[in-house]
Image (tube, rainbow, N blue to C red; front, side, top):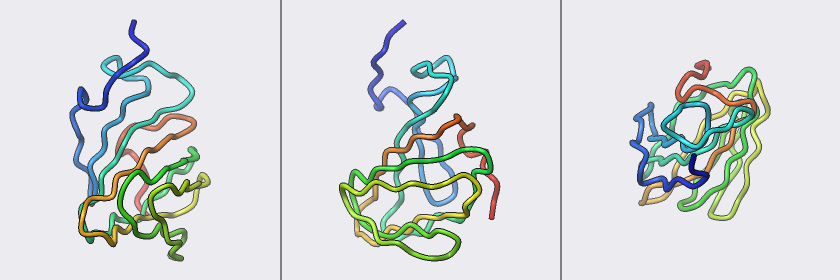
Length: 121
């Protein structure tokens, strides 16, 4: 069993307003972890991904490229490269990319979630 997996070996999954690559989690094709999951997501230039809620999971994100805003219950908070973002369980949130290039973020959920299985707001 390997403990290292490059994101380029994972196929991206299209979700509304973004693409995800889950790299760590319970799927046998990725790095095994039972108590959290993690990956990367891209948001197209000048886009706003739809609001959603993770009822049972907390999420932490880290902005790798781009700039924009995270909306929490409809209220925007500006983000840029190097910012960490904490999303409590049960809080409606969405992401807007204000840049001319894709915004890329690293995400971690605990407990783990199924990719794209979140509740719509």
